Image (cartoon, helix red, strand yellow):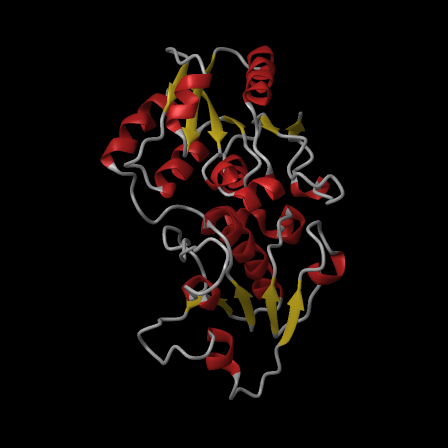
Length: 285
């Protein structure tokens, strides 16, 4: 059995699922989620919720109403089991080949942000990450426009990246110069592109982008994260922010000829190796 600890937001949880799914298939065993950290309101980090319920996943999740809450899922499920689970904690951000070949009966504690952890089952991951919930009515109006055009998603991530000093010091934020340069590259590579902007900060976008018939602000406060992700993944190309959510929006695009542009500076600390976070075909600027 494989147990994966879920931490962070939707994009992070998708990476954690993908690696856990690979190991569970490799060892022909079951996959479980430990959601204890997501339910712990006393942790100092930003509170997150279980966010994978909009997909068709192959894993079991703990029901907090089924048993007592004092122990984590890991302890509840396996403390009396004969199986000895080995805890594997991520040592570094980039791909670790030794961990990628982990044995069965492990508890995964980390982010696992590299497609190398699940590249052998890409098709299965894409199938698992098909959406089980429909678009909202507000979001659905954009679907026809996106499908009818040479659509390019632009993801602008600000939110806690800007408002939380600790988060800002770790992640940084993509500025308007990056987006303008990426847009020009797309225009030189792709015929008649139409840009659709997805963001958690619509006011900043309105102030910094020249919105027109070719550049449309999609996101609004009524959209769910699954609305944004579904629409982003329906586009043909992508300009992403330094965000795991943004990364998945581009990765899920079903276009073999897609152009994806990503920021060269993914984190503020240049000493952290993020090279294998990106598929080789993606362009970093």
